[in-house]
Image (cartoon, rainbow, N blue to C red; front, side):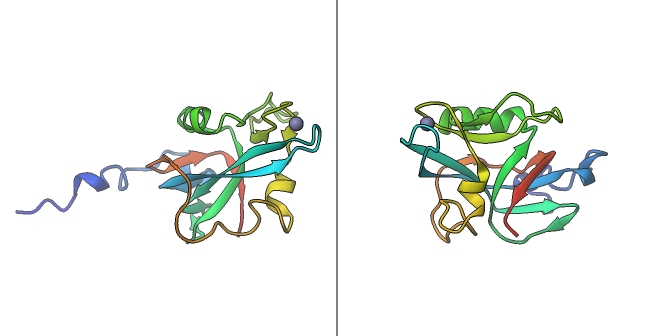
Length: 154
Ligand SMILES: [Zn+2]
């Protein structure tokens, strides 16, 4: 008699939360990539970080590839806690006008917010395009995590 449900897969087949369809699932393992950027305010070189998901399931659709995820809205406590130790500059600010808490990078010298546009969206930005193949930075979470909203490369 073999048990068709290995220990490893427990949880994957469980019933989704009622609001699961409205949320975005970041697929594990979730890595952290670190790079450097020049602060727009104090001109010092500062460490910047990007969350890398093995896949993003958005509205039930899988992107089927590894992607940077940024602008994460209302991150779960386990995600902020994991980042707190490994990437203290990637944190939430005061809620924006719409009451949303978003994960953003901050200068390690002066604390100024480092806009995602200059880290992810422009050619030449440290996290532009897709994460490289092969080795990434530290694994921050070994299981999937749900987020309210986020931006990711498609
Ligand atoms: Zn600065």
